[in-house]
Length: 342
Image 1 (cartoon, rainbow, N blue to C red):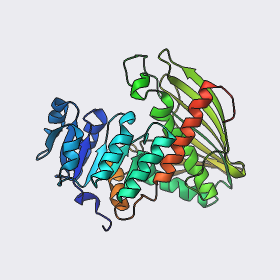
Image 2 (image 1 turned 90 degrees about the vertical axis):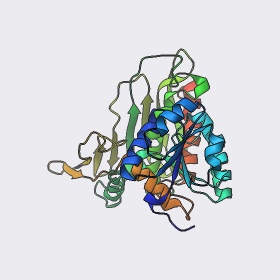
Image 3 (image 1 turned 120 degrees about the vertical axis):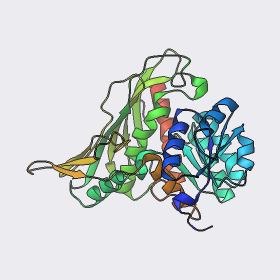
Image 4 (image 1 turned 180 degrees about the vertical axis):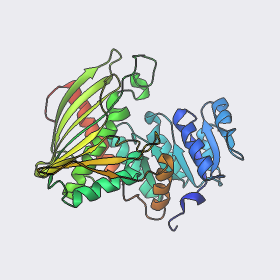
């Protein structure tokens, strides 16, 4: 199959929660007719979400949607403990797959999911929104230009503060709860991405990782920090939390300056213009580089379409996703044994 145009794929949505609703709303307004169906374990929720789109069908359960020949690709918007099984089922059905982050719950299941997609010859892309935005590409170009000298270190956070509720998915271990899995995946993905640019290896993993954090009353981590050191000495400090007030920004330090990214994760979402602020040693006022913004879900859909017939999206490959999950495993282990190198 040749590379598909983003607007030609017909989509099935697996899951009918908040993020699925946002996906459906953006795609139905950008590319009318793209949503073929919505499936949920709760038929009522599937009916409600499908009812927002002309011509979309509601399915009770996921199997019937995966069997529907009108569907070319699926967006997996369920909780991450279900991702491995749904990726395998979708791959077996010959559907291309855009799967919400984190790809699965650990490195082993992530590798299994990627293997299933590769064996079936379908494209698999993890839905890390920021990876497909122009701001991220401009950042890469700034670093590769030598504008701040040799990149040496990145400090990155992704966190928010929510009230503790043991029944909420964020804090329930049965639902894949924990800050590291929910938003720490962004911090580690970003740190690994920059390290990968420096090392020329998008599957680069830290040679050393040490850290710690705090466990909520339900037993899952609700904030955590870690120090990462990669081959060649490039380092990173990452933070995350679901009960942590933080800036959720990224700063990349080099031998000749640094770049600050105020909104790495959802550039342009609030209607503002994304921008990078570059400060150079011995320079004058910082340089502000303004970037374009693309629709957040639309950019992910375009990346999946680009991967069709190729097998992977260049800006975030399956091996990249597996390396992040493996690093998250180590971070979670470090929280259980604080400040131990793993």
